[in-house]
Image 1 (cartoon, one colour):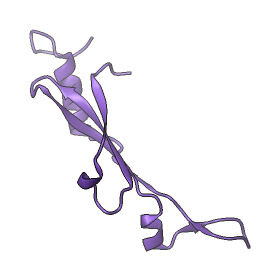
Image 2 (cartoon, one colour; image 1 turned 180 degrees about the vertical axis):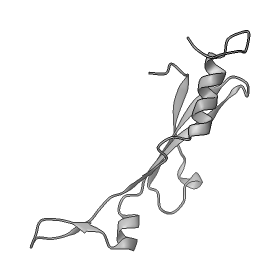
Image 3 (cartoon, one colour; image 1 turned 60 degrees about the vertical axis):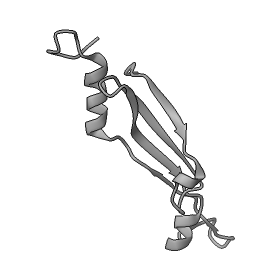
Image 4 (cartoon, one colour; image 1 turned 180 degrees about the horizontal axis):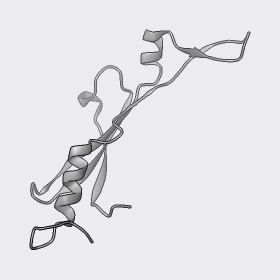
Length: 98
């Protein structure tokens, strides 16, 4: 656990593309900007992408169904490093740490 203030944002349907049925963003606090910024995004695309790619699953010889897929950012490396540095910078501004 990094100990950085964060929030999880449920994205409104009007702010998503046609692929996603549901989307969440993980945002971290950036003290220098006095605001939260997105670090990770994850969308539940249900079977939208699988239908386009014809990706199915099922038992051999049985009915096949379309997969449900997720799209996610593993980590926005530069923004995450910036969040760590900003949240743990010392008063002398020389290093970060607890």
